Amino acid sequence: MNGIVTLLNDKFLFDTNIIIYYFNGIVTDSKIDNILKESFNISIITKIEFLSWQKLREDKELEKKALAFISHANIYELTDEVADKVIDIRQKYKVKTPDAIIGATALVHGFDIVTNNVDDFKNLDLEIVSVDVDLR
Image 1 (cartoon, one colour):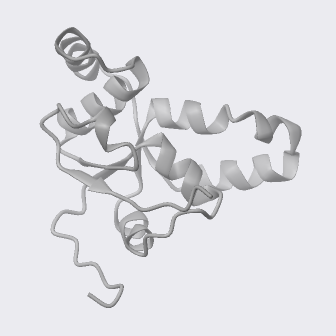
Image 2 (cartoon, one colour; image 1 turned 135 degrees about the vertical axis):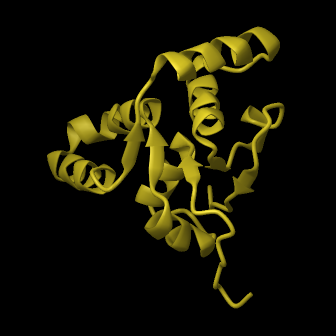
């Protein structure tokens, strides 16, 4: 494919881990840039998890960069419809609440999920885009 990704669907929702990895420069998958340009969507829980990163409290310059980065995202709130889907997911599967919120947000809004933790979402009826990262 020569690094060019043709997006069949411009509707992607990013899992928190990919946002953190991308921000830290450890995503090794070239398709991520194209996906972010076309569809930078996150759940409110991802905003909370990303901006709660302790390192941001310790480094104000890094915090400014993080706030600028996340300001480009479309943030999907926790609506009653999403909450109902979270409840359904949590009752059926052993999924942590933050992952259930992200998964439910993707399901309610028709997004594919972009993640490095495929196992967190494998039981949900979602298309999953796995992204490679260098965790060395």
